Image (cartoon, rainbow, N blue to C red):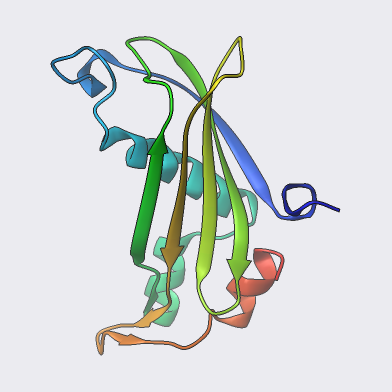
Length: 140
């Protein structure tokens, strides 16, 4: 079975708003991270995880420590897109892969990845593993 078939994933459908464009009338590169975040939190929601409530209850935060994005085809004003987030790892850190496809022709416009770690607050001490309840909710 391929990773994408067994790992938890979630897709969100979005429409590019005019204010996400740069002077060349394409989506500014930083906004792809915003689209990734919308899919990330939809994925967490689908797994029953509310990171804000979790942090209030446990004093554990999950900051993003690394991101990467490969821009393939530029998105433009009012393009409809599907952003998919897939859990790749959730033992030592949470690793998510992202894919943005244009609705209609399914062209892949961008791919990305992010890493998140667990951090005790207020000590700001990085934990060496993801807490069991979060790990299990993400399928690991």
